Amino acid sequence: MSLVGIRGFLFDLDGTLVDSVPDLAVAIDRMLADFRRAPAGEEKVRTWVGNGSKNLVKRALSGALDGEVPTDLLEDALARFFVHYEATLCIHSRLYEGVAEGVAQLQADGYAMAVVTNKPARFAKPLLEALGIDGCFSAIIGGECLPQKKPHPAPLLHTAELIGCVPAETLMVGDSVNDIEAARRANMPVVCVPYGYNHGKDIRDFKPDVVINGVHELPALVNEAA
Ligand SMILES: O=C(O)COP(=O)(O)O
Ligand SMILES: [Mg+2]
Image (cartoon, rainbow, N blue to C red; front, side, top):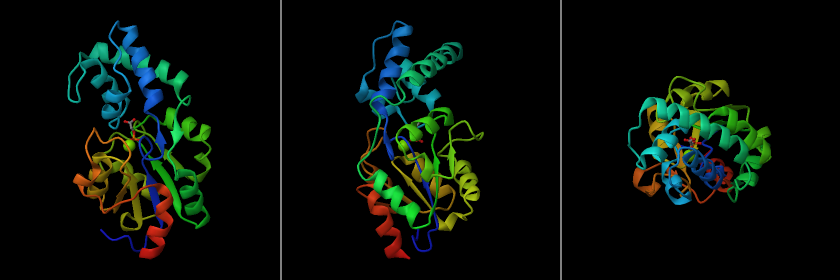
């Protein structure tokens, strides 16, 4: 899809703006310890992030990307994960290189910007605040804010409307196949970073419109296209 006429940006959070896995992995391992399970470790957690907290906890308990877990256990474990993640939220988490400059430049250039993440908003907002970039976004929409999560297009369509843009002038910026699928279904162009969390797979294989090295490349990308 075309990058001509872009007026607004929707950013994914985990794996695109913030390397949050080190803190997520500590919280997951503490939750597993509560249930006398062996720790999962950062490497596995990195391949499980992306479809919201409930799926992350389900994957950690089952040890598999598509594993199933009894509902009662899942609900108890999710509650424990939330307690632990609140405590570890921003100890090791960092903005990726180029994010601070990139979003500041886009803001200075007058673009509308919002975050659309599958992470619960109660974690997304304080995390972006702690990392000093929350003020760049006029909305931060979390995984529980709408009945559907990415890869469903609804959160993208809802958020684009919030920032006053129609789909064709809204650019989704993400790191995973969920972001690409959601953008395609919403009729939005999509740009991906290659360094994030895509369940261990190369994002180039999922054919986003463009792959950039970092968020700092976005201002030139859209200004050249305009
Ligand atoms: O919490 C998650 O599942 C990851 O969220 P994301 O949509 O920001 O990658
Ligand atoms: Mg992501």
